[in-house]
Image: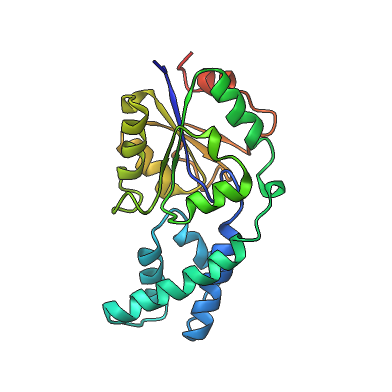
Length: 219
């Protein structure tokens, strides 16, 4: 039986597809004549597709019918899929594949916990699908982070209690979701944005599984 589980967000943690999300949302916002920039985009990180649209509509003081919202979300996703369909393995963030492989070798359970419904396509394009024991994406969960549903589902898939799970996230909403689920939280990126994380790392390059577990007081 595996002793610990690592649960990874996708965008901004394993690969920088966040830039493609931004391009697609920006394209939609421009068509709707709603001002939208990279600072506004920070609010969309770790948030579901529909919740992201709601934020953009809020920025533009606009309202839409449910049908119009579904149409907008579909168009945004079509543009996004066009972008990520050209993803290459080289776009994995530095050190990610090495860290995943070393975690598997150490007997750690590995799960993906992402709101993206395109997660399987992205993992396939990056060639890392076989490294995951479980994949939890937007097709399996219905509540957006900071609700812990996505991570609790991953822990259940790994057959591990929440306090034996470590979440790797680049968004404040994801860190909150991990803690609300009773899990340890490792921030990947900006220490100011991720101040609530148990520890913050700049990335996976040069990082070992043992270092993470030791920093969290698990080993």
